[in-house]
Image (cartoon, rainbow, N blue to C red; front, side):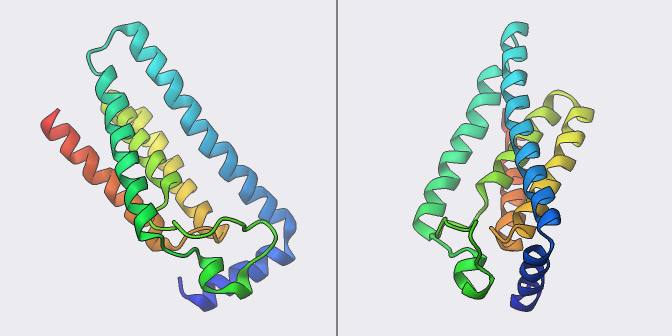
Length: 164
């Protein structure tokens, strides 16, 4: 999306507070659902005494730390920083837009589910796509932020399934 599209999205959301609230609430619900489900999944794997427990913890954790360090040093501006005319009262965080950690986390967790159960993984991958979409619609990230996060998580998973 370019500046013109972001301005149109901002204008729409600012004039349709209900739509903005729905997107924001759905973003929060889906994000917390993924993370809460992941914790339940880890407890289930622990109870089941699976050999993969450590892998299901370390792959997301290590890659999240690497992504966070890169993001800290790269320190890309967010859409509302790049174009102040789209800023509104709910945007307070500055920098560290690229890549999106919400999107990355949702995708890498989805791949851990996918490794265990293809159906469960597909469900969570669909949820991850919605999280990425909502991050962009809420003007918190650029499309490149969320797409690169999804790609990075996919690459991590490909390496994971080939070497673990």
